[in-house]
Length: 300
Image 1 (cartoon, helix red, strand yellow):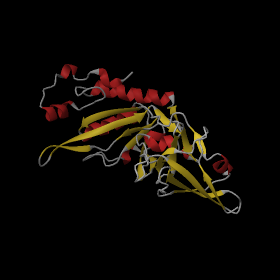
Image 2 (cartoon, helix red, strand yellow):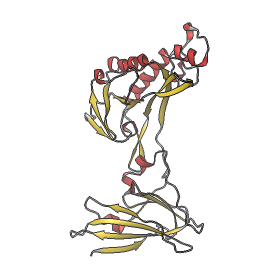
Image 3 (cartoon, one colour):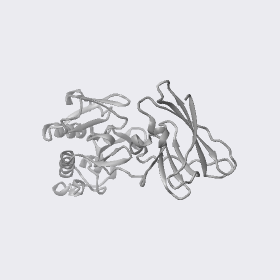
Image 4 (cartoon, one colour):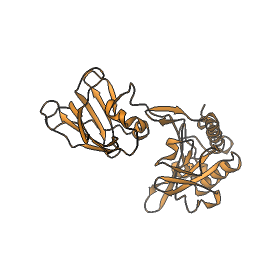
């Protein structure tokens, strides 16, 4: 068999769907007229990771309808495995076809892609819990923070070596002056490999990220403040679900938050950790040195 054409059908029997496709990532979600959600083909393997905070746009026909019949065109290899699937939504009202999405399949076996092209899911919009602290710092503060992470918390240090890859390095390899030029990642997990590939490593594994600073222009031409983010995820996506990070990493991250709360200002609100001098310079407020660090950044 060289090719096959199938029409998607929900478990409830409906063949009309709201359609959300991410053609660049080759994933999709179909929601039938009864409200049942189904992931398309092998989307479950990547869905939660790709859609964190980025809900794919719902398709709409030029006639105004948002319901579609979805046709799957299969091409097969000589072995019988699926080579590719062309996904073509066709308007359920005017029968106008939309631009197709082509999914190339590079693994085996692939029988389930033909027998069960729709994968029912109850909650497609799960989002991983994140902790984020904003910090108005001087370059020396970013350096001191990194030193604390490695000296006191015995953190491993990673830096970018490509757009989607980080590698373990020494703290001495990181340049903090005149300001940090690349995000830095910290972990206490010994099992992580020395090289890790992901567009946002801290979303996929137990990493705490120190971001490069945003340059906030206070007054023209060169009165600038440096805003860093310290960020990690308490949960990470796995397939179409969410998993808790290791307890050892969550304790590691909590110790970091406590240190920030003990050494920096939280006057701007919860989850802030500012250098007192920078806070005074930016907002023009005097600081009482005896009680400059409320503990709100420390978390639970």
